[in-house]
Length: 455
Ligand code: PMP
Image 1: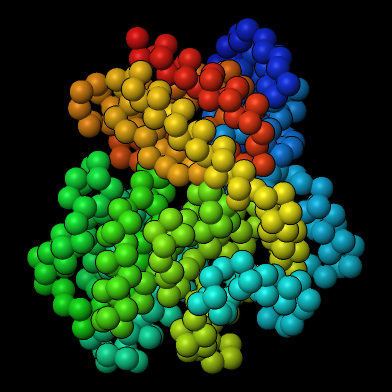
Image 2 (image 1 turned 60 degrees about the vertical axis):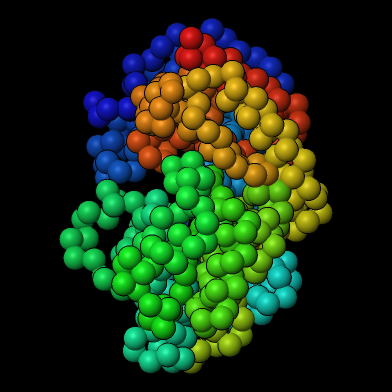
C-alpha cells in the first residue's frame, strides 16, 4: 500500500441516519471491493487515491453509492458542481440536446455555443469582450499563454515573451500549464524547463510572510528579469492547493504595474469563478479586472468545458482556424453550462456562497483556535483550505490530514484527499446550493473529528 491511501478492508461502522447523511454498511462496502480492484488493475495509478466511495448517484449536495450510503459532498467533485449535482434544469437541457441528435459539430456554428458565449460575456466584467471555448482548465491556461505571448512579441519584439507565475501555483498538467506551475515536484519529469517561464514567491502571508509588492519586483530583479521581457503575469485568484489569497494592495499594485508595462495580467479563475468565493469571480475581492481570465470547473457544474475570456484586442489576434480544439463548444456541454449558470443566477447562489461562506469561514477560524494541529485557515465564500501542522510549527502534517479525511468518509462527510504542501491541507468546498442546515451538520461533524484527532 502507498503511504496515505484509504484502506480497502471493510470496517464495521455505526449506522448514521440524518436528513442528509446515511451510512448503513461496512465501509468500503464489501461489494465494492471487486470494482475498486478492477479499476486499480486497468487504470493508471494516478487515477486513484480518493476515499473509496463508488459514486452512483448525486443530488444537489449529496452523493450516494450503490448500497444506500449517502454523504454530504464537501468536494463538489473537485470544485466543479457549483450549481449542485444532477440539477433537473441541467438534465433537461442536456436531454433536449441529446434528443436533437446534435452532439458534436466542431467549429461549425450552433445555437448553444452562441448562447453560452453571450452569457459568459454578460456575467463577466465589461472588459471581457470575447470568449474562446475549450474543454479543460489546462487547455484554457495554455491558450492564455499563447495569446499573451503573441501579444507581448507583437508589442515588444522577440524579447517580450516571459511568463511570470508564482511558486506553489497549480495551473494544470499539460506541458505549458505545468511549466507555469510552481510546485517543483510536479514538474521534475520535464527535465528541461523553458527558461522563459519564471516563478516568484506568492504572498500568502503564511508560508511567505513577505507580502509587499516591492518583494515581487525584487524577486524579478534577483532572477534578472526586466519588464520589457515579460509577456504576462499569470496567477490563480487564490492558490488552489491552500485557498490562500494575495493581499488586496498587492494585487492592485500588480494590476497597475502590468498596465504601465504592457504586460498581460492573466487570472486563473478555474477554481475561483462562478460564485465559489462569494462573488461571481474571485478577483472581485481585489477590486481589479484581469486582461485575460481562464475559467473551467464550476463554469459548467459538471460537463467538460472551459473558456478563456478577454479583451477583443487580445482574443482576436489569431485568424480563422488558428485557435481551435476538436471539442470546443460541444453542444451538450454548452447546454449544460448555460443551464448551470442560469441556476446560479436564478437561485442567487453567489449570495448563498457569500452568506454561508461567512458562516463557514468563521466556524473554521473558531476551530483553528481550538485545535493546535491547525496552522492556518484560508479561504473566502464556500472554499476553505485548512492546513494541518505539527503543533507549534508550520510543518505540514499530511498523515493527520489524511486520517481526518478517512474519519470524515466514515461519518458521511465527503472531502477529496488532502492537497497542498506535504499533503497537509483539507479543502472544504461544497456545492453552492448547500443549505445552512446541511453545512452546519457537516462542519459540526468535521469539528468533532478534528478535536478528537487533536487530543
Ligand atoms: N487551474 C487551476 C487553479 C486548477 O485548480 C486546475 C485543476 N485543478 C487547473 C487549472 C487545470 O484544470 P483541468 O484539470 O481541467 O485541466
